[in-house]
Image 1 (cartoon, rainbow, N blue to C red):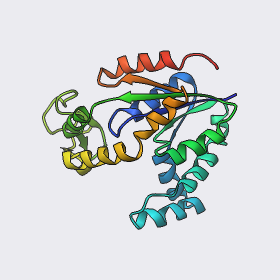
Image 2: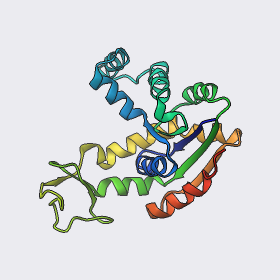
Image 3: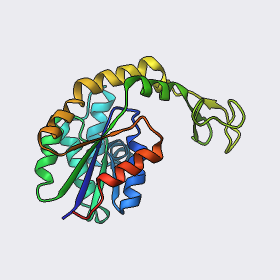
Length: 215
């Protein structure tokens, strides 16, 4: 029986960071749908070509196509014990399809609860190095020298998608499309929530506690 952990939360809530740490600590694979899309396009697979046609047209990649990519990924040996899902499901249609595929496995669903204002503040203060990609935060994790990367000395910039108006639009879409999953999993008695406003180490400690055990 595989152990599958579904991490939910708004964009910017810290799912990616916690998913990587959790997967490493639990000896599970980290499965990110964003990474899957990029990987298939890079490899030029049939699934990647199909997805690109939708993305180039500014459309969402259809649920079934994303599910096909997910099926291919979780069939690999490193997912035999289980995996941490990062960025999936995003809709109730995807959640229902995932539920059918996971029958007989242990499933934990954890939501990182972070307010919209905190997410906007996190994004507005985020700085990335143009040369090496290192990430800083103007208030929470500033570089030693303002505007200069500690690692390589490159210039630090704010990504366009971290601007407040862009972040608020992403949050609006999340509330409309993905937030209903909290009700979906809550009705099934699967949902646990963690206060994601705190220090990442404190969040991770709570997260570990919720998913302990071999199922």
